[in-house]
Image (cartoon, rainbow, N blue to C red; front, top):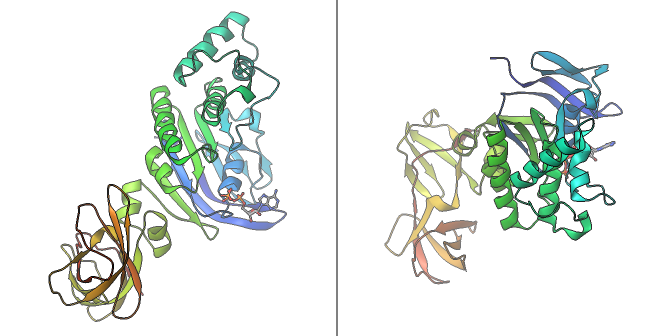
Length: 348
Ligand SMILES: Nc1ncnc2c1ncn2[C@@H]1O[C@H](COP(=O)(O)OP(=O)(O)OP(=O)(O)O)[C@@H](O)[C@H]1O
């Protein structure tokens, strides 16, 4: 099947300063993708290149089999049929909600506009606010209007640049889920840029980690979480720490946390050093004696879980997160057990 959008080894930048290099991925019709990465890594630059606002230094962008960007050629944004929602909502302050949304419906009759705007306001769950002005809306409501405006011309692809970053955490995740169901219901594909991993997990079918100017990995959120290709990706999709270790056999590795026997082999050579990525939820402290003892230095009650800061014999501090009441107090000596179902190992 011809992808809706294909990035073929694109490099982007400004005035010949290369910001991102040789980025490639494909998006199928109706698929939702996220670009996740640290601030300044070039996420917005890539999104702007897809929208047609920035030229490419090399590579090409192909939409439904037709090139829309290449070095020396940029099809203008208005000819791409791609919708864009910006971080700052960019609503017209002097226009009502109705007129903001109807702006994207030029050339339609007044009645057609009224019908389309009413349907869009219903979709974004703001049916009664069409007469209000942007300053009379909350941040979340403004973002819904911006979304309705971008959806009005029925784009096949929507680009969202940190659309929820001005909202608080709970609202952000809720809106991300709502936007996902709206896009899925309409069959609209989307690429969202964010530096919030939870938001990216909530919304995306495919996820790309952009860091150090390169797309480090492209895959489903589950693939990236359980099979990160390098420590950079591992550190970006959930908390965790690297522990150096020595591979004793196909499934066993010796680390500072003790000798860990995994349920699955991790493909390392016996005797070779490697790096293990272990998440706080996989490290369990216990009052039972064990091979490696640690001291609880801090305890943070988070409601559904407790996070313990533990100091190892080497002095290294690590985190353990437990989702059941363990009643361990600061100062307690505990043994450590690693629940290691799926090893995340990197060769050194
Ligand atoms: N118009 C511009 N001219 C020159 N350099 C720019 C321009 N816009 C952005 N940059 C630079 O390009 C790099 C990538 O910026 P970009 O906005 O794409 O990053 P980002 O990953 O979206 O960051 P954030 O998460 O902070 O929004 C930064 O170093 C930035 O300073």
